[in-house]
Amino acid sequence: MDTGSVPLIVIAVLILLGIYLKWDDQKNWETIYEAPGMQMAKAQARFAFLKQRGVKCRMKTITSVAVRGASPVMLTTVRVDVGKKDLPKTYALLKEFK
Image (cartoon, rainbow, N blue to C red; front, side, top):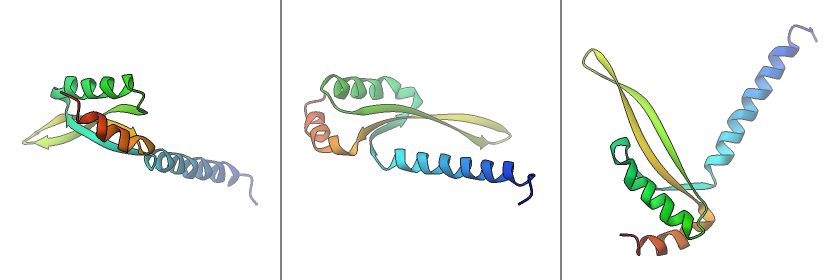
């Protein structure tokens, strides 16, 4: 094996590890609420409501770029994810949410 190929192998292993960790993280969560960034307060309210009641949850902000006409536009989406094990409890609690 050529010593020049060792760094390439290490980089490939690190990339594969990163992909696996991302996949493993995503399979344990379910999105229960998603809204445009302008409605972040609604997502925060649901997140705080569930968190205070012991639900394993997280809030994520996803930003993407869309091209409208000649100008790129930043689009933001806010998501509330819940641990899959807490889904039944979450749906029961959200019936109380106002």
